[in-house]
Image 1 (cartoon, one colour):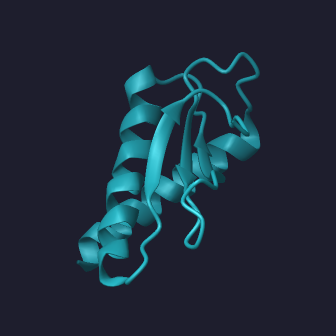
Image 2 (cartoon, rainbow, N blue to C red):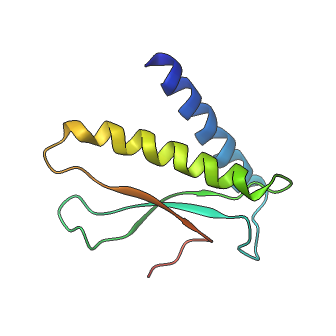
Amino acid sequence: MKFTFTVVLFLCLTACKTVLSAENSSGQNVYTLYRDGVHDKKVRMLHASFATQGQPESWNKDNCNAVMEYLNETQKVHLNPAIFWCEKGPFKAK
C-alpha cells in the first residue's frame, strides 16, 4: 500500500510540475482527470490535467489512468463515492 501511494504521488507531482512549466495550447497530448459531484452526479469537476511535452501520448494517458484507478479504488469505502474519469484534451466545462 505504501509503495502504491508513493508511485501515485510521484505521478501526480510529475504531472503537476509539467502542467505548471509548459502548457500545451493545441490540446494535443493532453489528458484531463475529472470527477463527479458527491451529491450531484451530473456535476463535472476538473481534478487534474496531464500535459507533459516531449513524451509520447501514452505517457499522459497512462499517468491519468493510473491516478484515476487509484482514486476510484480509494472511493470504495465511502457510502456515496465520487467517480473519477479521464478524457483526452484540455478541460472542457461540458
